Amino acid sequence: MLDKRHPELTHGDVVSIDGKTSCGSQGGNSKRAIHIVSAWSKANQLSLGQVKVDAKSNEITAIPKLLEVLVLHGCLATIDAMGCQWDIAAKIIEKGAIIS
Image (cartoon, rainbow, N blue to C red; front, side, top):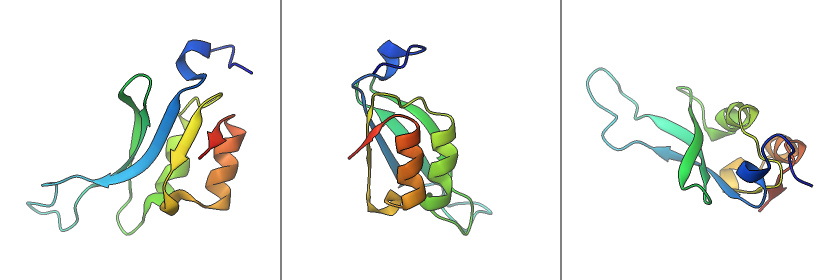
């Protein structure tokens, strides 16, 4: 079933959710490199959103914040082992996506 609000934006797209550490971001007064979780749209070849991971935290706490702002209905969402948590999987399914 298509998302009637955004059918051309979501149906059939592959959205990859992953975290990356920004090279060269650890400098000056910062003792920790910047780590960001993003959602990449294969169909549109662009980032749909990004959330910075809080200091002393990890991707598990940032992924739900990112999922709040995404329209995923009809998409295939991919995520690595770090994101394979019951709550995260439930949120992806609630958004109408398929998990891979």
